[in-house]
Length: 61
Image (cartoon, rainbow, N blue to C red; front, side, top):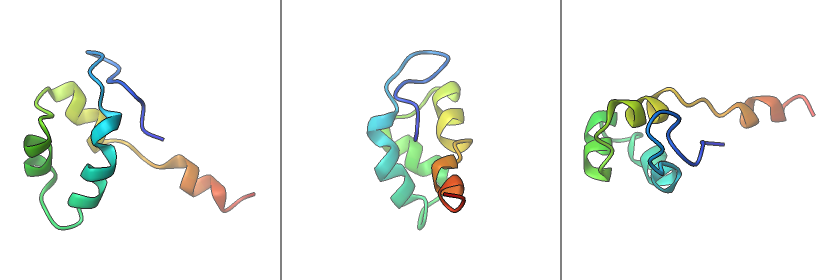
């Protein structure tokens, strides 16, 4: 689950998460973020460093 807003600046980033996740399979992440309008370093950090913990924990249920 991606946070709704960037922790540092408060910009809404969850609205681009699905498209970002699909497009990074075939394009460089930097180009995808540029195309989606994610320009601030803090917001880029949120997308680049996000780990889907829910998927990892689902195995242990």
